[in-house]
Amino acid sequence: MKWLIRGGAIAGWLAVSALLVVGTANLEPGQGEPPVDAFGFAVVALACLTLAVAWRFPVAAAGTEAFALLLYLGFGYPDGPVLFAGLVPLFVLGTLRPRRLAYAVAGGMAAIVVGANLATGGAGVSLQSGGG
Image (cartoon, rainbow, N blue to C red; front, side):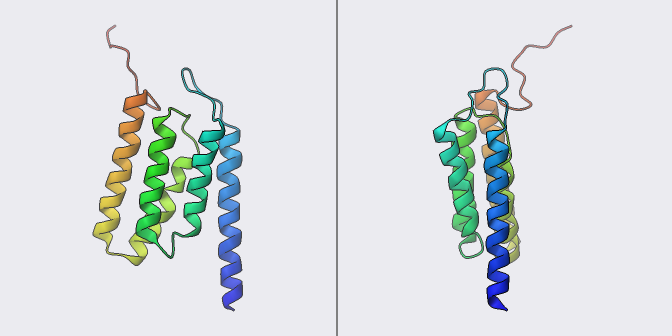
């Protein structure tokens, strides 16, 4: 029975990783955004590998996902499925550790995403002055 659960976890990880990679490969960069290159895919691969250890090391996985998001968004790559990779360690963290810790980590991850988008002019950021 244990092999069935482990096999299901591996299949789930492979499916999510495939969706992250394929989804990232099909992104169309917006104006001023660089296309996802080898470094961008290496960051996506780091996010995928981190998901494999989320149940065993949830705090480290959440920190590594936050770092991967910072790198990905900091280099100005287009927003994509990699942003959802951070949700898995947050779920695991909230399940296995005190929720306060999960909330603090979620707040930090949100600050990273918003800060990187503001710094690079990413999604939802308009640097044009208003006026009509």
